[in-house]
Length: 526
Image (cartoon, rainbow, N blue to C red):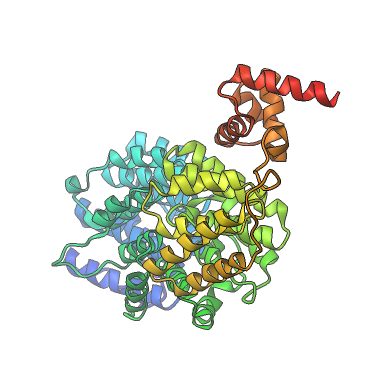
């Protein structure tokens, strides 16, 4: 290998006759460079080895696999720069196709503005001279793009075309399994995610898959188990733990500690994640920041929200595995009076619900809209939807949101708070349970009266929220639900949810009855 690509003595000399021995020395030197913070040099060196075109096809495949592993463990900015430098070398057409597909994958994961162009270029290069390696990385890139846009069914379809048992080079198996697990989590298929996360009992634990397994536990409410596994993995000192994997485990550990009520311990583990990072490296820590926004004492909420929302607008990937993160961001934004941020997150959740029409995301869209509009009917719809899923923490949070709704009758609010407290207790969240118990106590101390006409919930047009009034007016004028969504700048799902609430409040059952009720209302007010 030429000394122009490496410092003298960093990589083995050219006179290594045995290809396997050369690879061992080559990869060991690359790992040393990575651990020394010189990953760009390591990537450049592996690309130079590819450019030499020595030792045949098997050697080339192994070098490409090592380059891919190195790229997935480093910060996005370093990986993007290193892969661009690699492409500047004189690679053969097949190697160039694989490196270009790998670059497109990293760009797609971070929501890079060049991602679509890179995927097109990678697709063209693969069509001309690609092989199984470029096909795998191109598939991962296309799946990553779908995930960044919240299109979970699209990502699932792309990944379904891959058969890991047919691979010759198996080192990409972890990357594909990780993407499949993320898709399962986003679709609310938590049992499938659990099965996909389970490692071969004879193999060593795989840190990237372990991190996703911890996220699954957080999503379904296995909090003590998630915390214990995160502590063990972070303390293992594994060199296979990527920057992203470490950030995910920090987020898991902080989430468990906050829900347990141990705020000081949660803050201690999160502080490293609060450091200012420029995009695209900031995307690595977005999940951890979704945990941090629940704690105003940790960081200025408005500033933190701005960072998170900015990254999510590039890629919603961080919202997908843990369902209660979207509503939490809206809740935090509403609490500090940041209505624009609350609206932006609500729209992102509704966008995912439109592209991924499953009960989990329909419920989350209703919850975020209910928090934004202070609409108890939307929050009830969210609770009903989440009851059909395994996302117990999200359900408990939605129940507490409903209990905090000022427009809900006291007895109904108390019931919701009481159920939330019981659910928090079952999932191992005594800190959140204490919050729900305090809400129960506040409601119990509220004076109650015998039911009377004054206590009856409002009905008719007066019961509609401002958002529902706008929807009713547009629909009564003859617009379709799709047209109403476009004119009001909301999702189709939002219009559909609000229309069901409008029917209930007005006591109507179809569009014709809605038109008549609205006409009577307009006639009364002149």
